[in-house]
Image 1 (cartoon, rainbow, N blue to C red):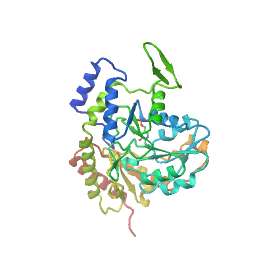
Image 2: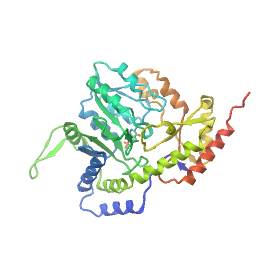
Image 3: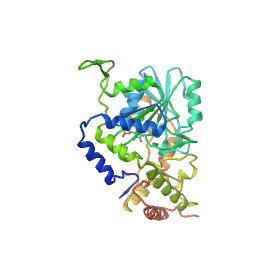
Image 4: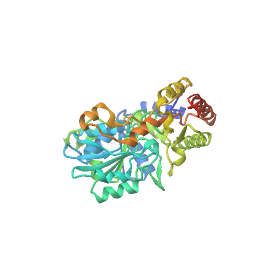
Amino acid sequence: MNPYSTQFIEDDDIQAVINALQGHSLTQGNLTHEFEQKIADFIGVKYALAFNSATSALYASYKAINLDENHRAITSPISFVATANMMLECDSKPIFCDVKANGNIDEKSIKSYISNETKAVVSVDYGGNSVEADEIQKICKENNLVFISDSSHAFGSRYKNQKVGTLADITIFSFHAIKPITTAEGGMLVTNDSQIYEKAKLIRSHGMIKKELWNCDVKSSGFNFRMTELQAALGMSQLNKIDRFLNIREEIAKFYDKAFEGNPYFFTLHQHIKYFSTNHLYPIILAPEFWCSKEDIFKSLQKEGLGVQVHYKPINEFSLYKDILGETNLYNARDFYRAEISIPCHQKMNLEDARVSAEKILSVFEKFKVPSH
Ligand SMILES: *Cc1c(COP(=O)(O)O)cnc(C)c1O
């Protein structure tokens, strides 16, 4: 199976982890702090905080802005469920805003959802493609909202000439195994705001601060959301390769764009992307006449050894969210879900793999062609 995305671990990554294993400390220590500094430098922000996952980093960022039962956040239904689940864990509730044809939150619709209880906008850079950050930042400023970017797909992406991570008040990256670079499990919160940084840091580790000798104080409740030194070592080794990884992904995406040009079955999002993307996903968007055969198409693609996936079932359509929010009709999100398939695109592939994959995909669709009249 050629998966839609996968990790790429090389000898030096393995050696870095072995060295860390032989080090003085295995839990959050010097390597983690070094990793945080490198991420802060790479992105160009003041603060970076490493977490054991992006999910816990999201939780800490919501807590850090005091999202609670009296407040709500506007977010995208086309995301991994963690973006919204962590709001529920803060006793808050999401307000789902519909998406555009590229799967990103429709910045023009955000305003219509703002009320007195709205505290934040949490956007998602779908597939690595940056949201329209200037517009969202402007809406947030005008309405006194916090702009949080779940950029779990987008470590290394750009918006205009800026790096993703510098645009929102808080940005979250994921280093889950199949994200652009990995620490197996892991996440990072980046911000320029010292207060948010300090609060999130407390939540990461029991609300505890060290004082002199054995003395410490507990300032808030908290968790153990810490990253290990093994993960940080792997993360630093992977960070050295980010340009190579992203260039391979971009090359494959460009190859696909060409291979699929003018085909009657689907269009691709990548060809319309304005800003440099990690291409965490390479989504194809099926023409409506194929939507009812999507299950069979999906199965046929799997049979051909293609590890395809669908990103995402809209979060508002999960039973939990229907129970909490009632039925919400977000037509673009629903159509996006009906139409989307993510095909293999990752740094472990070469152009020959991409050629084989493209050929198989086109031949599968050929079989499902609706006869013309
Ligand atoms: C992967 C992902 C997460 C969760 O990341 P973890 O590191 O697995 O916790 C959150 N949001 C989005 C959009 C993701 O793709």
